[in-house]
Length: 335
Ligand code: AHM
Ligand code: MG
Image (cartoon, rainbow, N blue to C red; front, side, top):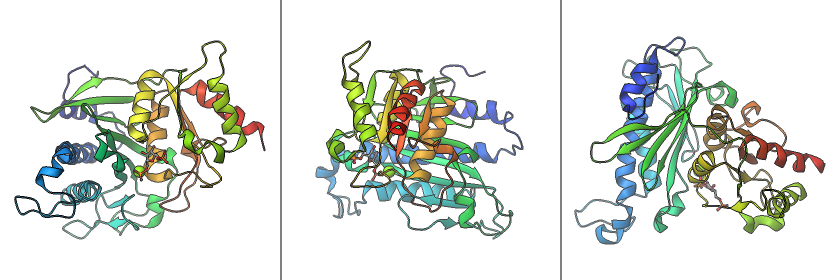
């Protein structure tokens, strides 16, 4: 039974038994992510000091090389997961190819792969806007004990065993699901401990926020243009209000709490939109559905798409169930 103020460590131990075939490996994996996220959080929070300590690519006053934060986040997550030998493979938005982890004994013993976007929205850091880490965990499909293969990573999102995000914002939160609802934990920076602050998060069925980069409006398909006009029209509880941070984790997190829809549609500039199926859309779709929301590409459930390549992009529409369904109606009206 999730109790508010329970620490993430206590929560993980308490819920470990709920996993089928649990050997504690998934719990240890989430624990490693929790640790890496604390290190990244520390670094992200120092970003504003960059002018004092030396800018990226320079040597700072302590004689250390300044690393770009997205590189730092990528290295930190990969190192933490590799050192703990807790996964047999990692795919990252920052790396062209996946990484094989063989373990000290060289036997590729772990059964999980992790896919991640280590620092999403990192262009926002310079202006002090919240950024996030997104992760997605699958059980490998190739035989344990052998090196991971591409097919271990190209699984449809409906095969995820866990997914989550960390938001480095006004407070730092870790939100994740293992397929039994969504829980949010807030970091107490003084203690370095995450506490359960948002048990059993629920996407409101309806909402009044729409989040889309309207700068791309003229490039959007007619169905999306029509839906945006529908949102703006004064009728019933409309017009809706527009909120777009341009940082996926923050936009989805806000909409999950307040009710709303996030859209990154295809456009005449980008035929599949911008967001990556494996690192961004699948984990967010899993979380959204576990919270009672919905995610689609306008026609098909995101979690049912069969990935064809690691860095594949897809149109992404995610949020309150009734809003996503309404947007789909507009999109599907026009062939
Ligand atoms: P990134 O992975 O290169 O950081 O890009 C992903 C980000 C998302 O966080 C955000 O929703 C989107 O790009 C914003 O894109 P745009 O500036 O085109 O609206
Ligand atoms: Mg990204």
